[in-house]
Image (tube, rainbow over all chains, first blue to last red; front, top):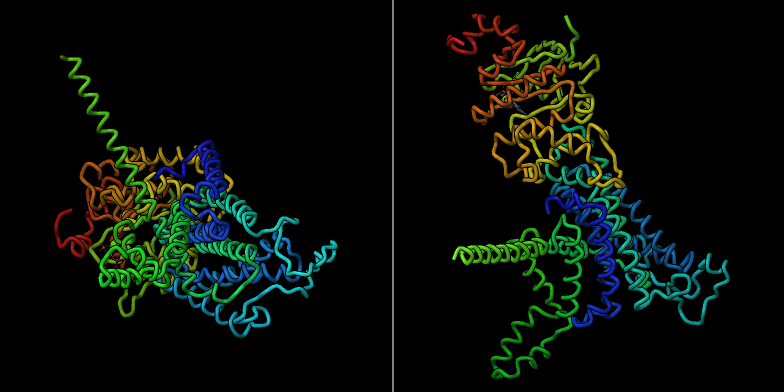
Length: 387
Length: 253
Ligand SMILES: Nc1ncnc2c1ncn2[C@@H]1O[C@H](COP(=O)(O)OP(=O)(O)OP(=O)(O)O)[C@@H](O)[C@H]1O
Ligand SMILES: [Mg+2]
């Protein structure tokens, strides 16, 4: 993994091709896992994009932002406004969402990047909570407060009207030049965006810019005595990362044209930190994996309830089944966060490099085992020849 | 007299009540090796900190090739051609040795900020060769793909030296570059420092090891309690009675 940034262009091309194939065929290979329905697939893509962007900041520079949900929310609001004012086409919505959160990131970054470490984390958290509260109360004309921002038939949609696209009797739905962004189409739109932004992340990882970011994470003092002005590096990365989050937020609106303040809550900021660390901060694919796993298990675990558990343990004596179900009930349904917390603790303690580290260890074990076997068979051969 | 590269004039540095540097005047000529010696706590590292912009002087000025350094940021001073090796190695522990050497080389080439992501490191062959050559010169090449944090303290020092030299600075400031090194590695480092003498690089070196000092230095400045008590060629300093008394307690150098 150490030489990962010296991958040749050929290797990268293969990497991108395999990656794209895996993403685009998700509706097929996720079928056996019961995860091949559009809503969940869209979530995989959206949270994957969020985590990849988050990892550019946290994984490369080591700056732990605790306010990325604010960018997510701004991306959503901006996209819905684009649907209302401009057009139901997803392209302006995505652009508008990404740019708006980029602008917000400039302001937040300018203030928060004056500090590092825990102070930086707290400053970003403060900003996100401010954004959340503003969205809830003061900015009601823009965010529609508690109800959340929704589309309505009376929206102006200037561009659509200009091109003679008339409102139908039902509420319009976002579309890509007429192709709806609901269901599997929505997934493929998100998947296409995912492939593009993954490619950009790959370029950053492979470039000297990426190496410099890692050097900042490793020793910022050395960086300044080595001739680098670290602030613009951090600022650029923070804004890129905020734009990834804004993009993810606007895709949320693309697949479901609503925007609510709860999207900006600190729990949402915490979730992307978990995804990134769970998968493996600083690795290219890890955060994506973390996002997928968390969304997948959230989907399974939160669907369970105590009655289902009772059914599952009905073979036990009643009193025992009740006990077991009550205990396990703590970890499913609304208690899914408890499970997540436990898994997270185990990972941080035993696999600080996340799941990618786990996979690497397994890979090493396999190779080591094979190596040993080769060795053994060779020496056996040798002794056989001698005999 | 050849050109003065570094001109420290009337520098004072106070830490609260402590006067760590008082009235320092030091002129360093191009291409020379200058040793700064003195007992622990004399203010040697503080002097280097003032030069590279880590600490602002309480009074006085530092000029480099006629340009004012006081008030400049550390990265600006480095971009002007001043590199420093610290007393406790400042390296990139989580990067490989090769990456450690490439980052400073990139700083020299790309300047203080550059965000191009179009060119992959894979295509930076020339830069990588420079970095590898430097690691080779310092005897670290066989570890180039190892993480820097896994190296011994002496190796970290040599790595930091490589990181400075790969920038081909006009002036290097070395704070005890051989501390913690084996005799063998110390000699090797002396040889390396001697060999780059021929390339017209100016060096300021803080050192406790008198063997290193006398085999390298053209000029020696002796610092005690924040003041320069003697300056001159190794011969002059060796025979200065004040130095013998203040620094060595009468012991023969
Ligand atoms: N940042 C600081 N704040 C307060 N006091 C300091 C600071 N840096 C150095 N000092 C004090 O200034 C004096 C000179 O320290 P300095 O590190 O320059 O000595 P030195 O000559 O490098 O010693 P050594 O040989 O042990 O490295 C010491 O008394 C030290 O405690
Ligand atoms: Mg010192």
